[in-house]
Image 1 (spheres, rainbow, N blue to C red):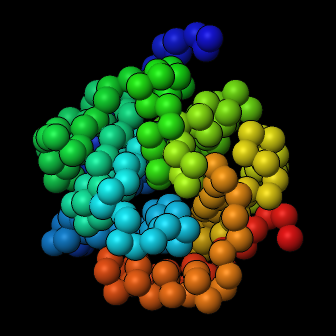
Image 2 (image 1 turned 90 degrees about the horizontal axis):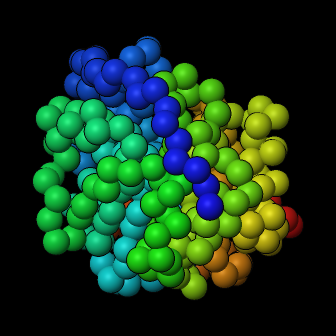
Image 3 (image 1 turned 180 degrees about the vertical axis):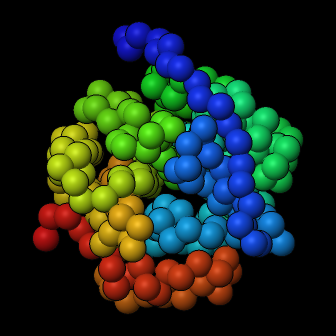
Length: 252
């Protein structure tokens, strides 16, 4: 059993830059961004790529699925899954101030029958059996105020993540850059999910690399991925055609 962490929780604040509002955890590092005239749009490229699991399910099945975010950030993924994809959605967030900020400054709706935010340590909450085998899209974006490396990045953690997933479920993880920590993170993810279950994007210009792991490995044919990408773009406005070009299995 993992011991409960008692981290220092940084002060949460925001800054406005033209049409954008950024979330900060007491430093200049941007933890999330909202377009103020379109609060549900996914602004950052790496956040858009956290939706790459959509390529591996039929578009008409999405509303019947459940998403979970580990780390609320500015609420972007939670809002998108709830409002645009119309999925049942739950976010796990450690810092109560982040939730207050998302509700007050970033247009996150109040909890309802299809969306909730659980204030808890993600490392412990994902060990609750109530979540096991229920999550189709697990999105992991856990960084502290220094944004140096993922806060939770161990083999036991990724084993627990896999246990959350349905057979068709996928985990997407934001890994910052191609530093040595990236290689170690991918090794742990591969050990938990199997090397043939892991896919990765090329890094974004900002240095974020999104990695995906499937509960049940499969390699859809390119024409299937392209057809789904067209549907994703048409239905939800995400640049999925580009994903197909820059998203590859780690094990060829």
